[in-house]
Amino acid sequence: MDAKRYKFFTPTHLVFGEGCSGEVGQRVKALGGTKALLVSDKGLERTGLVGKVRTALEAEGVAVVVYADVSENPTADNVHAGRDLIREHGLDVVVALGGGSPMDAAKAMSALAVHEGDITEYEYGLKPFTRPGPTIVAIPTTAGTGAEATMGAVITDLATHRKIDVVSPLMAPRLALVDPEVTATLPPGMTAATGMDALTHSVEGYTATLAHPTHRVKVRRLLDVHLIDVRQPFRTSENPVVSCVELFFHSHVLTSCTADAILTRERAPAFQLTGFIHGADFAGSVGSSDGTAPFSDLSSLEDSGSSSSFSS
Image (cartoon, rainbow, N blue to C red):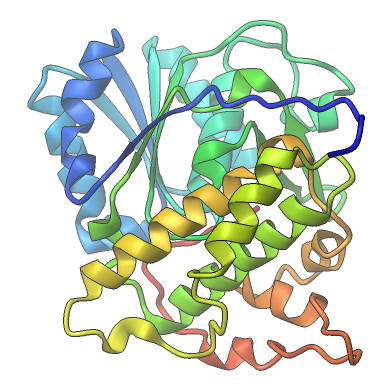
């Protein structure tokens, strides 16, 4: 090991296991939450999962306001709408349900609710957040983005046609309920894309100049067993939840490696490919030693009408 200086920060309490998302009401109540903003997207609302989470919260006496209008690439307008709901209803907890898009939006909503100005003013800490907003609880529905374990958000500024990073330790979820059951019905194309996202995160967590030795140990161990060739749809398993348990666990740990290590150049071109499912865009920006892009055909696995949007 070299003599560099490293930092390691993991503020999120992780609960992992089949069915743990059903505990959200009890766990929010235990954190002192009484009024929640439930942040999601229209796809998940159509599946009924938003309603299930709302019911679980209300069963424990937690009042719920739903915002299910997060875009596939969350926008500044999405964040401002959620912020306004938090302030209007005096909400003290934000529950993010979805892939990276709802989770990123929810983290930004929470932070901005107790600060002035627009979210675009806080790009990459140029204007820092100084105090915590409502408690953030994340329930990821895709295995790959790792947004439940990171302290940043990628937000689209429609006015300038740019994606911006908003990063602060105060944006890290207090609790993540990582439930493999919620991904069991994810379409194969989305499964492949999120698997590619997790793979890219792991490479970034290993090669970044700020990578902690702990990151490299985790990445090297888990890449031995992670689903590397994401072009092979694993949803042919007789028990898809079993496959999801392995992929979700590996993805969560691998993607959490970027929380401190920061990201690398592969993410820059992917930001420009906004029209693709996130993960499929990385397939075109990650090359092999012979100069080709071995996963560049991943976009052919995209499914129309997917059940969740995600980013970052």
